[in-house]
Amino acid sequence: MPEQRNTTTRVAIYTRVSTFGTGQDTENQAIQLREYAIRHGWMITAEYTDHATGKHSDRDAFRRLFEGGSRREFDIVLVWALDRLSREGVLETFEHVRRLTNYGIAFESYTEQHFRTTGSAGELMLAVAAWIAKQERIRISDRTKAGLARARRQGKVPGPKRVFRRDEVIRLRDVERMSWRAIAAALGIPVMTAVDAYRCTEMVAPSEDTSDSNDRTSMVASDAYGIDRLPYAGKVRM
Image (tube, rainbow, N blue to C red; front, side):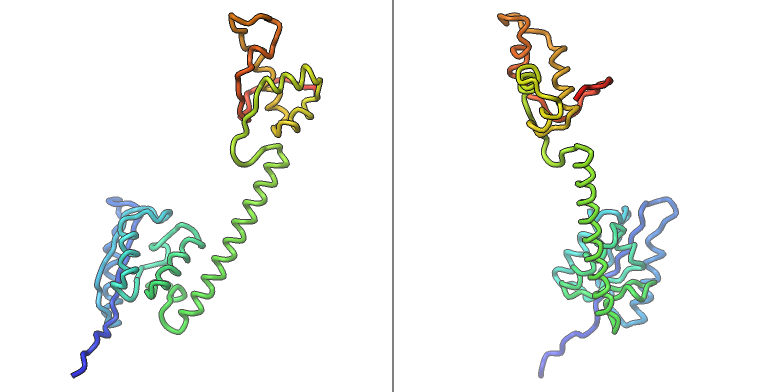
């Protein structure tokens, strides 16, 4: 006699509230979700509950939910609303849904029929989710490029902190007689950073063993200087 396979749909319920003990209660969500599952003839195999913000995915029950999904311990994840699953943003939220789908797990929002991967609208929901996620990635990329362009226009240098020698600024200014703009261009730093570094050396006392107290370079020959600006008030001739 052939072995009969269990065709009962297994469902995992996920509930979440941001805080605990302030009038918010996950049991209100859970009661409705249990009743919904029973009406559909589903078997509730697990319930996961978080009392934490949905703005990040570092939640204990949330993590265990996906661990169970990766092991196919259930067939559907049921939530009261999409924002109970995540409030990280459009891109991140739909990435979570797509991750469940890749595990072979369906997703249902109890209060939002358009946020379900079950039924005839499931494929449409996934297609829309993929399009939204793509548009969000494009917007993030555009904002990043715009921010970098603005930083360059303002003379800021994105990326790792640049380091230069203050004595090099002194040499270019006092020996080569270069303008502040030319010094900044030569060292790859903002103009006022070069000015601040130069004026900072004027406040450094000469070491006791220096042979020439008028030799400004000897005061700072071993100093390295980062691009962090020092405050300076006053006009500077470029």
